[in-house]
Image (cartoon, rainbow, N blue to C red):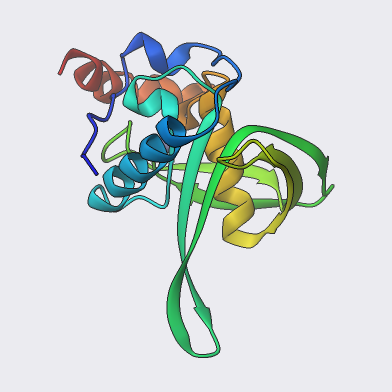
Amino acid sequence: MALLDIKVYGDPVLRKVAEPVTEFGPELEKLAADMLETMEKGDGIGLAAPQVGLSIRFLVIGLPEEVDGERTMRILTMANPEIVAESEELATCEEGCLSLPEINVQVDRPEAVTVEYQDLKGEKRVLEAEGMLAVVVQHEMDHLDGVLITDYLPPLKRTLMRGKLKKLSEQ
Ligand SMILES: [Zn+2]
């Protein structure tokens, strides 16, 4: 496994609409392992391929959870995810992003979503997500369309944050 370089706000790859994944197999498996390692090192719970400079529709999630009193981690690797259903109810969460260090934004998103995707072998799968998992999967899917949490800021707050963002993009 290898640590990958995380692209930060200002890098044009973060604003691109990513291309579908068409090749499955060992190379994608290696990318998934490297992305999970990079995500964990950065203390994140999700990472999308554009954040490591690859404009493809692929993301990983590693969400701590408790099963029968034991702390484990729910790991998901998703290619070409599509939201096929979402709840009308919204939930608000303060989100951070490895590509936007030290910035948190309150984002409203559907509380629950159903996502169709392909696994590392290209098999079709369905994820029913709610709570934190729904937040993470929607956040990472935004990256595949070039959308960042700062896009959810109301105009006034975005203006106030302009200096901070400019600094990030100049790093
Ligand atoms: Zn992010």
